[in-house]
Image (cartoon, rainbow, N blue to C red; front, side, top):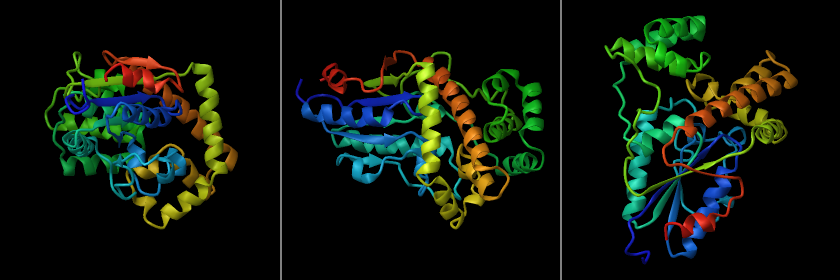
Length: 309
């Protein structure tokens, strides 16, 4: 089939943080190009949406993007709250435009709910700003523990899937319940249906021991590469007021170090522990994707491109 005759494809390259998804996305775009198929990359990392959050998110600099168009990077200010329903609409609009140009779209990232909202037929309940504000005030005043206990009593199935320390997810679940829903869900449907065909799901997997070493080294590199300076600069544009950005792993710890609440060693250790926990959740989330093909870091992207050309 010629490139002109084929239907543009949606690719999703997923997996835990630090597994090499970005490198594979670039290699895949290049390999598709050798088949005469244009490709563009779409970000599915919630924190890489934020302008200026570079070091702590391992965001690929523009100079290293090999001339491949990249979308949905640096589109939000740190004072803006990232919302998955907003992201779903934005990403699907971008992907539609890429396909209209006859190119494949490569969705790449490890934010499970963000990826799922695009790839599968995900629909979101509405927001209630007043309920949300009241719950967030409780979160700020008492921490996530009290709210999580309330969620566990009201919706044990959702509570079992939500990190007890993830205040934003707990608040959203309670907000949905307050509007009369029986459950928030917070998970893939039992039988997820693809948003559009053709779609190819590729997961990058690293053995647990190797992944832990990668992640610990990555966090140490963040501090060496200037995360504290980055966070200090972001404070000047309102990071402390950002509901989402200021709670990001690494950024919250850097803020605590700048304020003297954590030492450098404590900030790094806490970030490493939280990153490892987050990676475990990512692995569990993506393992449930039907039809996903798992590859190792540095996999031959030409083989992937050959399989659909």
